[in-house]
Length: 514
Image (cartoon, rainbow, N blue to C red; front, side):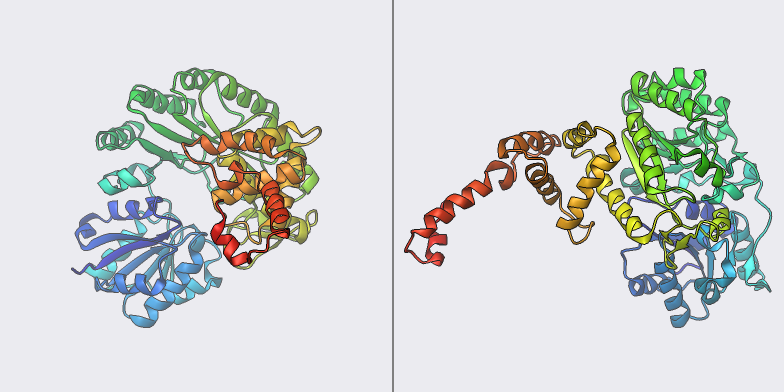
């Protein structure tokens, strides 16, 4: 089978579907029948991807480029243009929308569309395929599309997508805030889709079996009217076992929204709440506005009066933020008891205004994706590495939900600071593990077990009792060996026995009953 137009991208993992490609496909008009969406993951070999794409004999390949796939996309584009130079490669996506001219991937590709490409890509394909005309300029841009004229992409989620993947939706585009680390700070206004048409599409997805929706709107609760209408829609269908993810403005939770979310079943709603920093001076540096007292009140309400799962964000490495300042903010946020605290390390997004601070705050970033901060005036490289490890281990232990009693114990030991108490554990883990990825769950449990005994002075029985409840909570039936037996005492007994044993060690091992 051949297709003139292929729409492709490399997702970070299979459960993530490409919302952008479905928008492009939905708006191709009469060219739809000549096009196809094909998605891969960044784990897939670039040569295999190139082979698969070119087997369709495409004339145009559109590739979505993001911060998580930019390196892999560069390799793919390089291969495509070397193997099939006549195939037109068109790039799009946030990673190539800014600073495009200096990027190697844009130099290799034939064309790059900057910004929202819902209509621009269709216009490009119509000119190229129907009129045999290509743009004179390598970089293509245009006015923002009329949001009411954009065709919705929801019909192009397949049954397989609905069954196994994240279903992304949006009721608006843009953000009114100017947070300098975020590309949404460049938006001029918030534009909204027709709410009744949107809810019609959502109903169709529900009828097809969709039960989980992830809203990508930057400020879902910006408009109380729209927010209320959407929540009322889902509340009326909450008996279906829905799970809804929203990104919320932290200090904006009016009474009408509060009253609605109180009615949802426990765990049906997840709010991602971007705090980023609790330091007012740092917030001012990056143009972040939060009424922190209202934020505290909203967290207290969410914890005490609702069943909302809260996911709060903090960023390490913002200009003017030291480790000590971050620790204080972490402790305040942890005291509000969100279900998760996502500790992110600052990344330089191309085009983001935070670049204006590079000189004054000595901001140094990696020059390869994901362009993570390496050091600042306030956090040197050694401490930034420590914070990287803290973030990873915090995610593995606290955010995962696998160590609730253990994490609660660590928190109970924090006479002054929960951050520094967990930091000490993170440093212990750093010495135990050569790397902080690819660590099995059993290894994490064993590390926590040894920490309790070696650092906190727990007996075998005390450490076992604390961790056994966590280990069995997900439904595990059998305990690992280190939680069953006191291996230290057992080894000592075996050593004493072996000292007076004349039987050779090899034969002893075959005779062992343990």
